[in-house]
Length: 295
Image 1 (cartoon, rainbow, N blue to C red):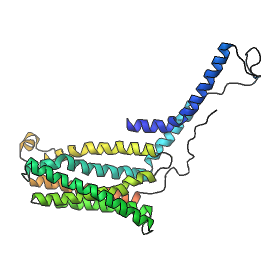
Image 2: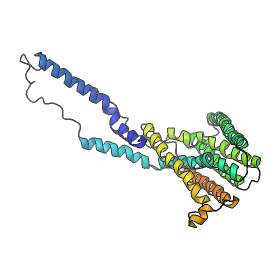
Image 3: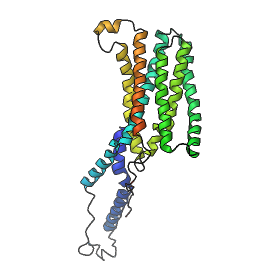
Image 4: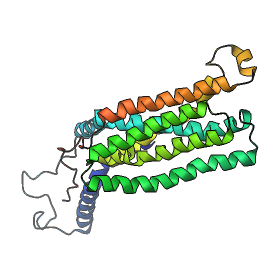
């Protein structure tokens, strides 16, 4: 729904004021005709205007279709696809932590629900604090000239992806509750640096179609959010092999280690796709902005 609305609005929505104005003019003409009033062009009898003056033809559907396809094609530009990929990987890892870490604390670390709740809150609180600090540091680096806008995007995204990968590997081989919590603080704390990575890059890649790009990007990343816990379940059940016997057996630390390594690898994929391909130059920089024409 978000994707469809974004594309249709960009193609047709901005012309709605002009359409409303034209509709208002037609309604006024109809009122004058029904009341017997006339305009100077119509003459005393309210008849038609001067010969050769015809009603303007309605906008051709083909033109609107071309505009729709032109705007949709922006979504397949390399810098925009790089943002979509980074956002999807970020959500893929994030929703694994949200959905499956409580199970890990319970089944592997044997933490009580109260203890697990406290330890699950700490990484999120640290992540919130890091988001404020990183925003200040990133702005200072850019304003001082030490990093360009593109440099900020690449540096912060790299630290976030690579740091989260390290945190996932550390979690895989931790043996105590507090070790796991410490490594999850690394994952969650560094993940917030993406606010200056792909998060801010949404505002860079499009000048005239930012709403459409952001809406479609959120839709694509939501699919990754859905796939993440499903993938985790598949890995923990033995990758689909073994049928009922595999699903009935108890899941051990080895399966969880493979799972954490898989999500660490996904962070590396995100860094490999976003960092070299991102851009701060709008893909529609030379596109004339749509303006409503009022008649």
